Image 1 (cartoon, rainbow, N blue to C red):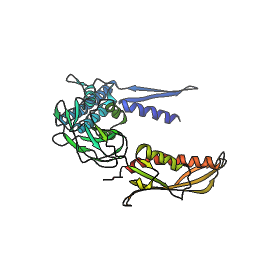
Image 2: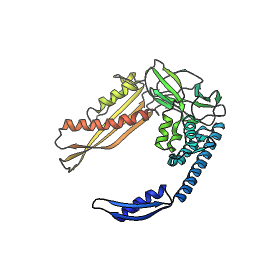
Image 3: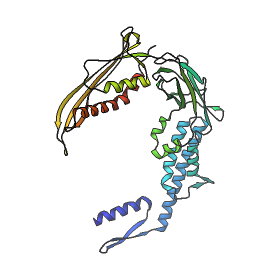
Image 4: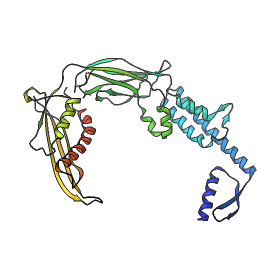
Length: 360
């Protein structure tokens, strides 16, 4: 253990100091003592070399970052400034000033200000749409910085309120413009909001602390108000005879009617026919530390048809969702546990599946 202790001290010192020499070690009843001497001349020389190297590398990334900014390649500029910060960070206890420029400070301010002074404008501020249909009108976002258009920066469009599907993020062209299409509207909210903003996926390659620095800045965005026409989608929700998970149909019905459709009790009046079935199988008993557990295997199938043409529009299924219920639970309590667990999955997955349901 004494050798390991000495090696640990030696390794820690070696990472910061050079020219040290182990002179003596001794121990008392409770402590180890290690005595090092440091060659002052060699230490001064190595410190200067490391300082000069940190300044050189940091200044190089700083200049490359400035060049990328001048070329309006802002995502690359961010990456370069971040690499410069990583290079100088271990040596910021030294004075890393060169020609009157504090390299770490300049890298930091350049990094956090890459996206300052930017704005996004859109060709439209308001659009009309219909539930579960696309909008043919393109939405164009133009990115600029201090009045100069910015090419080659990826923008994204997304629903802030309401729900639906929008075309994928795309880089701005030489005019600083990126064009998007609403491919589906899956919420029945009368007023919804879209937002065009900078796609921040480029930050995934940055260390977490550096990501947070950028996220704390004010990012440009453009807002588009989407107004739905008064044409609700009428759906008939049919619960099949094959239905073991009692209570699940009520929760899924509430989810559908609250967020997406208007449900009717008259199948002839419906535009959509929703066929719903569930299955519950009991598996083996699992021996637990405090009590044994019943294995419940829950499955469901939700099919949506065009009620006029009988075309299958969506088939959403999940099989053998495993729920472990203590054996002392009543049948009603076990059923509630199963329904609750299945709804966790439905709440997570169904809105995404509905994005592909298009009635055009």
